[in-house]
Image (cartoon, rainbow, N blue to C red):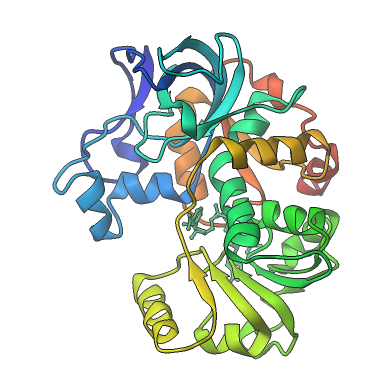
Length: 333
Ligand SMILES: NC(=O)c1ccc[n+]([C@@H]2O[C@H](COP(=O)([O-])OP(=O)(O)OC[C@H]3O[C@@H](n4cnc5c(N)ncnc54)[C@H](OP(=O)(O)O)[C@@H]3O)[C@@H](O)[C@H]2O)c1
């Protein structure tokens, strides 16, 4: 099968499309024929082996796992002998943090897969796992968001942020999004009650008061969380120094601040699939690349200015057309 591989750490230039062995299904896994992927900041962190401590998991001197990619959607081709909740032919999506997704086939544990929403496109569902799970778990699992509460989402227009705005609205919250002025209209169309532009108002001086502050960008300090919120969740990462400072200062404070790495599970994936089916969440795909241009897609997202998501398809790029007309009309303005 074909796969996008890496044999050393570096930028998109160390990636190539290679012929590799098709994986063999394990007892608690699914063998999935991949139809689409999406790109996440985790892909280029793993590709570059940065921050350095990540190499203790992904290989100290060279990558332990040669096929890049976490997010996928496709069709189940084989089911492991211990798997009871999926069958051959199911349309599934999921996340593999060890990589292996940017390939014609992936063998993934059944517990990190969920059934796709009926009628949804593969690119749309492949764009959902990491970003959608992070948004859902940040707001609901860690942020304990309740109906009628207010939430500030710092970094509201990217992969995680655009899911977070829509999920928070679906759970009945009042949403204020923070993004660049170029994306204010986009964030309002996603459903935010208010969209603040960080290039027009300094967020570190913002005096709004919220029940929950979610930082997907990763530039807020503890004093920002305390000034604006009753509870905080941070998922974004600007610099290691900033994150360490934040977590150390939070450790000496009583302010409830959560930081976590999203974990894929079937239940949360199917909650997201239901939100997409019910049109409470629209997955916005800013750009779609054919599979052989995956290195270009990774290069594009490294700028950290993506509006919604970047998807990659293994065949038929036309499949993703019309996924989200409302948001697409904004993209082309
Ligand atoms: N903890 C976890 O499990 C987890 C999971 C997924 C992602 N993450 C992390 O979360 C972060 C976001 O991921 P993502 O996939 O959403 O990335 P993304 O799609 O690249 O989005 C980044 C967003 O940040 C916004 N941004 C840039 N500068 C900003 C500023 N000064 N203030 C507020 N927003 C700003 C950009 O909006 P504009 O274009 O409007 O400027 C862009 O939309 C990354 O650091 C990623 O590593 C963590």
